[in-house]
Image 1 (cartoon, rainbow, N blue to C red):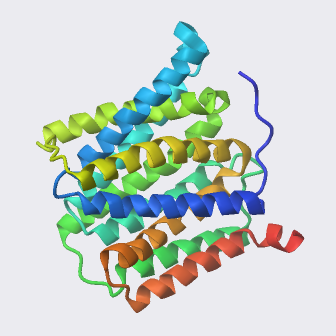
Image 2 (cartoon, one colour; image 1 turned 30 degrees about the horizontal axis):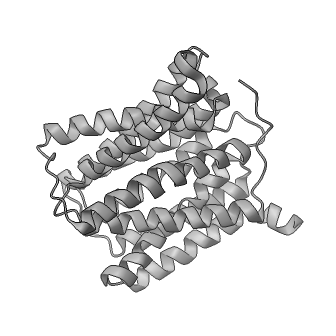
Length: 300
């Protein structure tokens, strides 16, 4: 394994790449929702991770052979794989007890957990103003997706807690990637650990919940191909390349734009309504991102 150079702040190229990823990831929300009646969302995730695991597993074994997992990365690789899978399991469980809006809000608390977990690294440590920016961005997510607060039930609170656990799992996946030996492994091996374990765990959850049924139709095939080839293979390759070259906490903050793009694409493609509080929340997310990266913007 070769040790990678220190991560650097975001430059215009990285910002444009992450924005493109956020648009693609936002489109996956539309794809999952469009065919949820034919294939349960958990099963859709399991199928795409199975396809991705076959691709990356073949790549790893062709490149490294039988000694692929004798390089000391297995333990930390399994750790990030379990955390990665737990994120999606929690997301599915939360949706059964609380609203989709609440699930999005608490799932996208992930940048906060990433920033907290990486405070031990000098280059990732955030200043007071940057923490304020993260707070503003997260407040924007809350306003955008919850709107007028209602009185939560005990079941909703339980679902919110599960979604928060999913957000913590997502955020801590990046911490484990930085601290573990798997952080110096190849990108394809890192992705394989995550999608491989994700496929196994989500298939088990789908089987337990009786959600293995797949009704094939042209829209279903297109949705699954998009999720497998574009999301679980191409976008993950790009994302984990970014994590190896740029500051993780800044990348995670930009990921808050994903649900914003998801709602915008839902309105464009599915006719979903957009309310005023969503626009206010989106503006706060952008403001928080600018605050966190203000120093680099001013320097440029």
